[in-house]
Length: 402
Ligand code: PLP
Image (cartoon, rainbow, N blue to C red; front, side):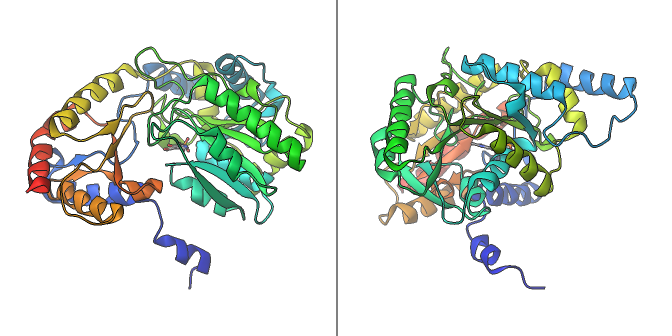
């Protein structure tokens, strides 16, 4: 059976993150876990808080009829209420439970959203570098991704975004704290962005949807806080999940909340609920909705990431590798250091990655984020992996500078 042309054409572009992760598994089988330093996947290794397992056990013990039955496609009413409370608190702006749906992770939410709003050829603007899956989530539903560079410090650039907006712009994705850069966008920049979108919308008669993708909202450092966004612009959707904050990415539970001020919101909600059903998700996992609803304000022990961030920063500093200091999330976005062979950014990136690979260090190459010349290290890995990699980094840099 031949696969569809569109899928075949995109196989080559398929997730660098996953590809590197699979390579890591192969290396670990060959050399043993301790000899491989896998910084590829954002797969939190910190345990979920004990309350998560306790809640699941309690729900199962109490049982009850219909525990595993279908439910309204938007989710259990109590789970929608819990999400509405969470989003209202985090964004300092009231959100009605009627404007929330529970989804199969943030990834499910983004696909449901784009399925609902995109006509063929509609554009989704994405600041670069970006989480590579956005390309597929847009393409899946007939959309076209338009990328816009951030500033050199990886802050959003509203004026550049203004220049990228057009009559076909249906949405703009803002991911903060950002994967891969760790940047938390500033309140003032977000306000400027809201003004840019309003001005554009008035001019062309179509307000783009501002999609705030924020699965890392609670993972922040040095007393920072991700600013509220929902109240800044009338057409806003917040997409998130408990994957990273409760350390349960394999359980696939997330949500989508629309700002109460969205135009045509009743029809929009009908469309989202229908897409959640007809894309085959039907509804978010029942048991997980029951588990996260009472824990909506709870997180895993996120302080562990602050320690790891410090430990890995010390190693990168000693090795002379420049990076963007992560303000949130759990990634270092690093620049391929000076030295090494001459060539294009992409060639030097490949060569540097090979140097790392020779020492069993796995990083996701910058091309995976449409940003050659850089690479991403995920530090949601055991402390021992970070400490154990120190000598390997030294050897890799010696080799690079030879
Ligand atoms: N958005 C960003 C920026 C991510 O980094 C990820 C996962 O890594 C997702 C969305 C998808 O998360 P989920 O596991 O909730 O589907």
